Image (cartoon, helix red, strand yellow):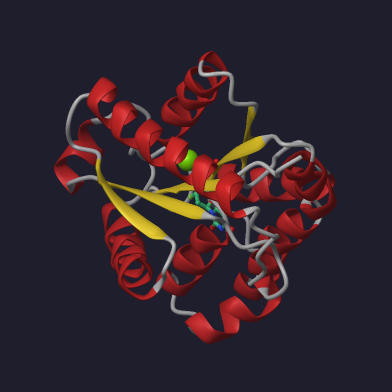
Amino acid sequence: MTRGAFIVVEGVDRCGKTSQTMKLVESLQQKNIKAERMAFPDRTTWTGQVISNYLADKNCKLNDQAIHLLFTANRWENVEKMKEKLSSGITLVVDRYFYSGVAFSAAKGMSIDWCLQPEIGLLKPDKVLFLRIKSDTQKSRPGFGEERYETSVMQQKVNKIYDKFSQSEDNWKIIDANSSFDEVHEDLLNNIVESVQNVANSNAPFKYL
Ligand code: FDM
Ligand code: MG
C-alpha cells in the first residue's frame, strides 16, 4: 500500500485555514481519497492545554523560549500517530506546522536558527500550501484580535517570515486567498490531489526535517 500525502496549510490568522482544511477533507473523501484533518497546536493534549491557556491569557508571562519548546513538543507528541495514519494510506491535511512555530517565535525577536533546532527530525510535509491574504482582508474577518498574537504588527512580521519560507523551501506553494472561498478551495484541492498522486506514483518514503 502506498502512504498518504502529508499536506500542510499555512498562513496568518483568519486567512481561512480552518474552514478550508475541513472542507478539503470532505472533498478528498468524495474523490475516494482517504483523508483526515489535524491542527497544530493540538489543544487536546497536555501540552496543548498549556498552550491554549497561554494564547487565551494575554497576561500570562511564560518565557518565550519555554512556550516555543512547548509548541514543538506538541508536534513531537503527534509524530507516531501521524506516521501510522500516513502509512495506512491516509492523507493528512494539517492546519499549521513548525513553520508557524518558527514564524511566530521569530516575529517576537528570536533567532530563526535557534527556533528551527528542536524541529529537526520531525516529518517533512510533501506540500505546504501558503494561503496569502492582504492585511485589509485579514482585519475585516470576524474574531480577529481575540487571542495573543492577533495584532497587525505581529501578523505583518509573521507574513514576512512566511514569504522567506516560500522562497527558500522546495515544498512551498503560494495560494492567492483573497478570492472567494470556493475558488481558493478548488485551487487547494487541485494541488493536494496532485501531491497525493505524486506520492503514490513515486512510492515516496517519509521525508524528515
Ligand atoms: N502558533 C502556532 C505558534 O506560535 N507556534 C506554533 O508552533 C503554532 C503551531 O498559535 F497565533 C500560534 C499561531 C496562532 C496561535 O493557532 C494559535 P490557531 O491556528 O489559531 O489555533
Ligand atoms: Mg487563531
